[in-house]
Length: 397
Ligand code: SF4
Image 1: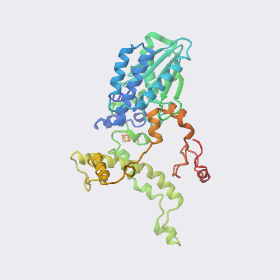
Image 2 (image 1 turned 60 degrees about the vertical axis):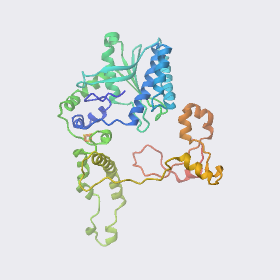
Image 3 (image 1 turned 180 degrees about the horizontal axis):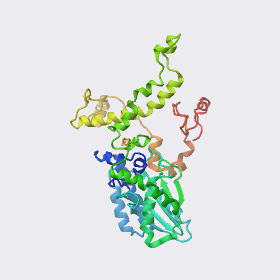
Image 4 (image 1 turned 135 degrees about the horizontal axis):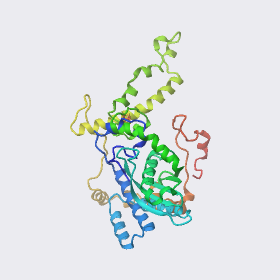
């Protein structure tokens, strides 16, 4: 669950550990909720309720009443039932690997302020048995795959959980397992397992970083972690990376310097294009962030010199579709011409009946044609595009 009210939140640790100036800088910007975030919160509530039913003897009447309430939420969709069921299945399987039934608790507030000033958060599920502390974080998002290895959010939660359960379990906990369960983005949960000593040593190592960030003594350090920073559109440090025009000049040939062939001298080399593509990628992201900021700013009554807000492209729609269709049929046009019988798309069907049933019922009919050739940096994990693969379009997924 979100822990955004902490200045140094666990979920933003991947950012403030690199850009120690970010937490204080971000304080000036409001929290912008989104439907995605609200949907994620609702999905978490399904998970919490089902953990309580499965592991904490929640009575059927209370369970059904709460379930009904959750399903009445306008953001509810059937996929949440399926993903939360998969989550419970995962936890159940995990619980069965213990020699005796572990203790399982959902939505546990943990305090890791010993390492990060005022640090706290909420673990989706904590399971303790034998010598192992196991924490699981449910992620409903599917846009960004979250890794478990060296994940600072999970490690901070684990530190908080160790502290919380120390009075009961003392030193019996020797191993710490951290799992990211992200059913809409990863076929298998991502897991990191480390020893208690390794976790504690990591906690010690981040103390000075957290202290610096909390005190407002941090340094701005732009990078990939800017992506979800609340100040990403107006951060001068991020802009400075791109405003160093001289850097761009360095990889562009100077036309005047062309020795014999003026046309060749004015043509970017492949190496220069590679350099510009690399440097330009983040610039495009930054430009889009600024556009989004400027639009909101003007709509809120502010001004950005040289820019205004206009109406974008719009398409015609019927003010009353039923009346319009009746009028067309009334004018003598056949219903068969007016109506089109259309099946739901693959994605809509999968969402409606859930991944497992979908695979069982119609998985045999699913094919995955090769995607369009797409430019990507060499570091991209996807396999090389092969023109020959296009000839095998229709191969089973
Ligand atoms: S945009 Fe990037 S550099 Fe600027 S404060 Fe945020 S994380 Fe730091």
